[in-house]
Length: 224
Image (cartoon, rainbow, N blue to C red; front, side):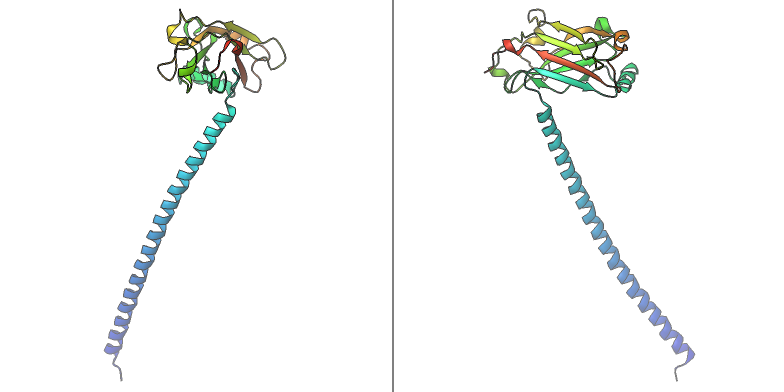
């Protein structure tokens, strides 16, 4: 007969064996979970990378699709009240439009807007400027840039648009209209494009959005 002491000893051994087996099993499962976590982390990293690539590709495609090559830009500026508040609070002083071009192989340009004004328009006007940018085809284009620029704040209610035109003067603006040596030349344009008072009159801000149009007289541009 098995004595009580022997039975207790056997039970204790079985418990130890079961615990060893359980711990061993647990370690294996933990290693499997760690391996799976590593794989998931790698997959997440790969997925983030692929998403970033797709976003970058989509962004570049949207830039290409939205790039105008006829010397005309219509700049839609939504959430205008928030942008004005940010400008008033000093979050930024100006915003830039996407680039546009006088032709497929023409001058590269953009617009720069100071919502709270710049220079003599500071605090009272929207200041709108034209910027000649460094482009791919600058070496085969004619310099300086001398083509007439027309700005228009579009009245969305069908009323009178606000229009301002200027003729680039390379002699007075050497840093603005000669071949760019950096990404952007010095901006030039209208520091008193439209007063804040006039802006608030009917038709210019609709659905918290304004539209600014810029047109370059491309009839005088000699493309390569």
